Image 1 (cartoon, rainbow, N blue to C red):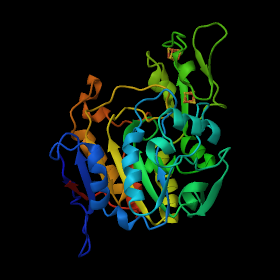
Image 2 (image 1 turned 90 degrees about the vertical axis):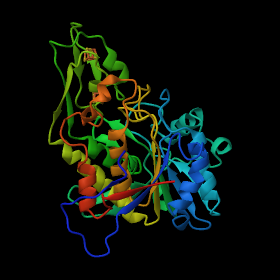
Image 3 (image 1 turned 120 degrees about the horizontal axis):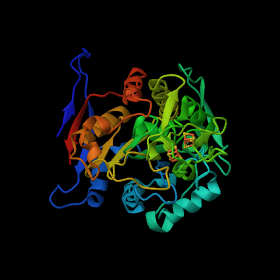
Image 4 (image 1 turned 60 degrees about the vertical axis):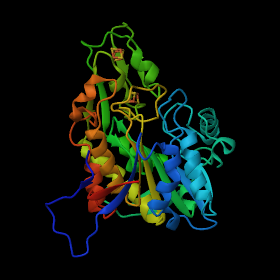
Length: 380
Ligand code: SF4
Ligand code: SF4
């Protein structure tokens, strides 16, 4: 098991310190479970310095799409709420509306979905407040003058909060290969225009000779962009409607859908880092938890749940988003395979649908000065 990562290709100034990533491992720590270890982890990682007395604290998480069961359940979140409330602060649970037709498209549906999936004041101790308002248009523009964005719209309630606790479920992801803290912020805490811009490069194409018109992809397309052609022989994708989520490619049993990139996949990952940088810079008080449980090949946006790629690992906490995502990648790569033997090949665990590297988000984030990929893993 990897306990630290130090790049030997760079020379650091005197006094350079690796970032600290605190780790509660599943099934260790004197018989204590992850629930009991959450508050100690919060304190060890120094999060009580992040959350101030009377702060309105946005706990940015993913409530899961209706029908998904792999999201991090409310009883884990309740422990984080307890730790924040212990700082005399006022936590609320939040996420932003999505681009697709599912049950999180506006604040009304999203709140009902959150409730159905077990997130409410009575179950977690904190209210649910959808971050970008009733129709997903409540955002706060933030200037960054980046390579891709001059201005990033931050979801309003995240921007308004005094401090931010980012709770991420580590999974694979079709577009970026890996999903952790950066995906949670760069896609989950920003407005629709930014989300669309990150997905713009994906163009799915159906191989008509391979497709047998089973219609499986139609049921999974979140924007109803797929139909079967009039002759009934193959699927047809309306690229005007397609938002580039890549789900059809993941779901097709015949591997008949290929993704044509209008650019390279690294560009989408860099956009993600840049979007997240706006949130990180706007909010200087941020703490990060990454859950490495149910590490599925896709994120929790889908109405179904795939088998996890690896056995459960544990919970990480850090003040550095780059370090916590790097540590998550290293731990998942080291973990024994889950139920699907396909993932015994470590190189298949985080693969963007367009191919290429999956860690461009982290290398660009490091370049932007958002953290370091060199970290010390500290067990609690
Ligand atoms: S799931 Fe695959 S085989 Fe079935 S209709 Fe869609 S593209 Fe064709
Ligand atoms: S990538 Fe596929 S599933 Fe996603 S929106 Fe486009 S057609 Fe639909």
